[in-house]
Image (cartoon, rainbow, N blue to C red; front, side, top):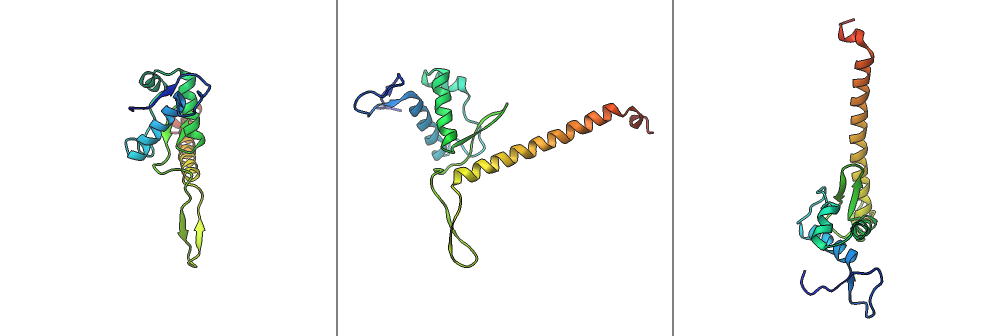
Amino acid sequence: MTGVVVGRRGRRPAGGGVQLTFEVIAETLRERICSGGLRPGDPLPTQAVLMREFGASSLTVQKAMTVLKDDGWAVSRPGKGAFVTHRDHPGREAEADDQDGRKVTEPAVGTAARVEALERALADAVEEIADLRHRVQALETPGDAQGH
């Protein structure tokens, strides 16, 4: 990242040509996603890794991650981290022909990716709950273990 001047404070310097650190972090991660260095479903670097890489505070890294999530580039999975949602810019709308040949505007890619990620997380949670219920029932029903 040569030639990038980074403003360390929360206020943008006069002239506006200087990116703030959280903007540099977010832009760098977007570039890694677009170039294929980070692919959909890949985990994003942890907060600690980004703090070391950019010499940034935890608050600055959190702000960059919030930007990526708000813009649809990433999604959080509680207890697991943040993950890439897609490779294309989330603001682009895809057009497709429906069966009658009319143009149909689909939801933004970021929204569809978020929904898909949430559906996967929900399916995982349902499986875990079913497994836990089975384990609890096995523990609460000692007669079944003896063949009764």
